[in-house]
Image (tube, rainbow, N blue to C red; front, side, top):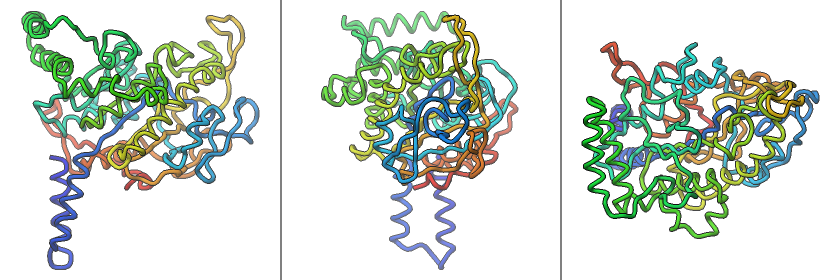
Length: 447
């Protein structure tokens, strides 16, 4: 529906300009419509927020209490420096771009993701969405019933958060448009890509039993839960669906390239899913592999020694991100798929120090800092090797090309072929609301 809305406008504009639309022009519009309808997004979400100074926006000339211990290194992209913690990403920097100037106002782990992914600011710190996030809206607009495999899949080993984080989701659109959750470790025995599988041949019997149980327990919500269960059973029982999760079909060298960790294998599954036709995939890079505070990226001094934590997680993070970027390009998916790697905000440029609650010794940390953050983009048909925007010499705030979350969301919609200026969604008030009240796509990232 979104693509038809967009291209109807384009058709009228082209028809009025120059007295009519030629056959080559019509064919071009049709080709563009097909391309946009077939696009996909993979989001690697670093819950807790990435320290921009210690990764993608190093400040080697800043005072010691700002720059941290990691030195910047050159990359394959002219003029782009990143942290020494990310040598694999540095080697393929011509294939991705860095946005260094996104800034917003939401400074906690509940309203930060809401601001970034829904655009709306709220002081509410509940881990419950008030407005649907952009991926749930995209799922709503691209909904196609009867699919063998869900169109929006979220993977994590961190708690029970099915999407990027429990603070966001479809909200009033309804749980039908939430991501289908894969909560397990792909490396665990007895699973298909982390989804538990039974080998006793009694899926149909279990399907009927679950249906009866849920109808009694859930009442009005049983239909939605039944749909999710049906999707899970389809993945386990239908070869065309389960094949996308079957890492045994990948050569050992490919699996090694991503790393035999939960993060690495989930990133590999993400690539397999978009190849299988899934439009929206999220991988929450948290859990025991993250190290640091609460097994996420929230590296406060009282929770962990930030630089030790970054060293522990950087090998895994650098490997799986660079492998996924390279794989998308090598398999010809870089036009169709837009890869985004981000947290919900940056971390304070100035290093704080406190006595750790576990080690009981003074250690360094960085706190929440939404005033400046960096985001990695790869694919989407856009040119790589770009550095978009800049922060000041201490990484405190943007000084060039400041970008708002609405612009970030507009960029996602633009890649997915969603006419963000025209599309509306239903609202509990009974009046439809625009999916994008403001904001423009980041033009440097447009194909």
